[in-house]
Image (tube, rainbow, N blue to C red; front, side, top):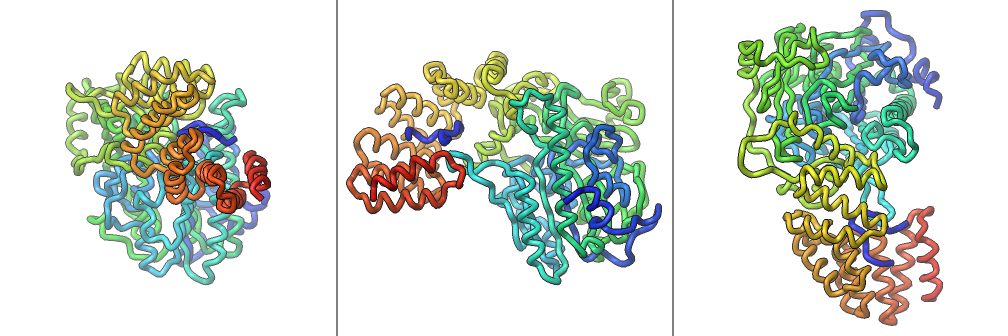
Length: 623
């Protein structure tokens, strides 16, 4: 079967009815608060990368979001809600803790929540709730700290064709798992959090030729459909359930030169939809600025659970018992560490207050949001006193922020596959680069990491990145694998070698190099590259599987067994490792053991896996 690839796979209810019936019965009159008494249950739905202005309730004429629109029409719509960071993990951490990133510690994807941080789940668990969370993407994996307080935390992702875990999963699978858990909770009060990933890039099928914005709308519609399934699945409990629907951040389609999210703190990616419906929630539209840190105290009050004291969190309740009076002079904070951690540029911090917004950057920015909601006219030099006043109100930066090198290699690789931690890393010496001055480079990198490009277009984009940033090891590795996919190993080898020379901190460049060398018959050089990969990432099962396969194919099946068994033990669903183990055993004449491994592989392979026929032929030959 050849070497195991590092990145390139080698193996081959009606919504209207829900809204009018299952979603809560009669619509409360304007200004009414719905059923009396606190809600018995909480359903929190977070939709990744959902722009507020792509939801019908927020004015999008082409929207296909009837479920979210129905919730907004019958409940409370927050018209000016903002994330504390345009990045998945920090934003969710702020929502679930009521604290800004400098305090909760999860400053970027892959950087875990500070130990001991109280969350909505830990607070509701202590109040007697059954708690379950079901997430759709790796940035929210349990290892990053958000699982605390949940009785069940569903973050198991499906496997790719090569047996390695995927980095996301369809919303339909998440909702199925969530409803199965919810139906098993009996009479307990419940807190269910469901995270959907559909609007995140790549949108739909990039090969379709349709515009990215249209495919994004398709994904938003699919997320809305899954929310409808959730609501319908609650059955009679729906009337006693507080529903909170929000996004973690928005998405840029070229605004300010940005593609995707995480680079800037403009409202393109900070503004989010936020809708509440259920007991104690009146039908209204709130136009005051709020932050996702405000969700925790609001929800606790509506559930009749004592909220933390104001000094213990940054958020304030905007509805229900204990709601604060609107304060137009209140300061709301947001930040992104992504420019620093992904590219080695300057991090950005922002504060909005009294209709103005200040962004702390190498070239500071100040915007009058009432007159300039698109943040196009920087007033920092013309209104220096206002800029200085807002800069002084920024919170302290917090403790030292870990960097990509502090992450375990698996987390680093999987976040890079989703478009994070994708640059050359922090640059040494000189003043920090303002992200505004490198936006074209960042946009090209985002196009590559989004999965929107393939074939010659992908190669052209990667070469453009390397012309501007010639020592970017991520771009070198991605281009190398793009060339391998087009049977151009001779052109890929120098790129893999350059990434290795640049100190690439994962095994991917070594694996790509080894695959090309082995294909060219240079077995000893390939073995040396794999040994170096093992030193860079000890315990990586893909590296072990490749070392075993290379030895077995070179006529040394006995020496291969230890590597192949190590790979299978570390990752039982790394299918090519188990296949290689069966082949090595067969070559040693240990037919019974080989057949046993091949049968186990058949049991683990998906029913539709194209490799089943080959494995079945091996089983038949061994019997």
